Length: 298
Image (cartoon, rainbow, N blue to C red; front, side, top):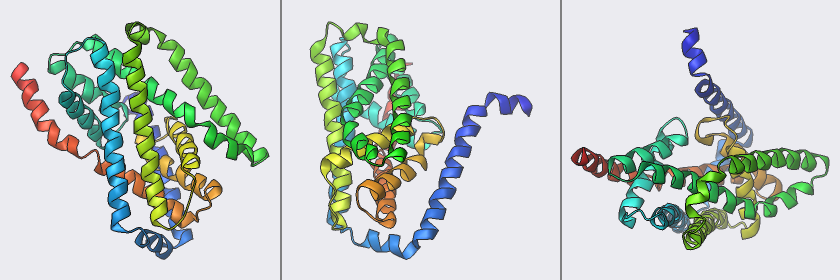
């Protein structure tokens, strides 16, 4: 038993973090009254929800495009349809496996079993993560500037974010070798970065549409900054897939800096999580065909 606890201490710690975040979310929901949350939800018409869902789905396509640009520039002959199916399968796994790395493992295993080069796929996935992080870093100032306006509390938050940024840069330096493959492929790197900008733009648009659906207005660029802050907070491995932590962070930021009520912010935070899950569902349809292809190649 002790050995099992020692071997699984990280998973247990993340599960405890998710449980604590869930408890805090429930407490916040009770404090705000379920009726207020339901009222905020009812104000969003089906049209806005569908538009937000479509925007999120397009962002997922850009995620596939980001990885595809890296694979193709590394001279890997893979169709975009195959990259997309592997990407959605990975996204699906990320939502239903115990860690965000689970999706990357599924992508790598699928690509390897389909006969693609293991080293190139692994390097491209690390680069894919780093490029995604770099993109979010560019919009981070739009969120940090409002945080700094809080005085001492803002300085503490900025210090925490600075610590996260430093850890991210340390990770980037340690994986510098990853990019050797693409140093002579500037077009591939540029296309990958453009894809991550597309991914971000449509995630921000999805949030913007949900908020607009409640007849509230928050600047698109402020939404970009607040989501970037949320993104970096959820990189801290204190919960499973950022469940609970993402919702709490976004609820706090939207209510503190976006001018929304707690019930409105909580509604948006929960809905955006649901959109991430819903738009990953195509991965469930791709999975059988990928497994069949893997068995065929075996």
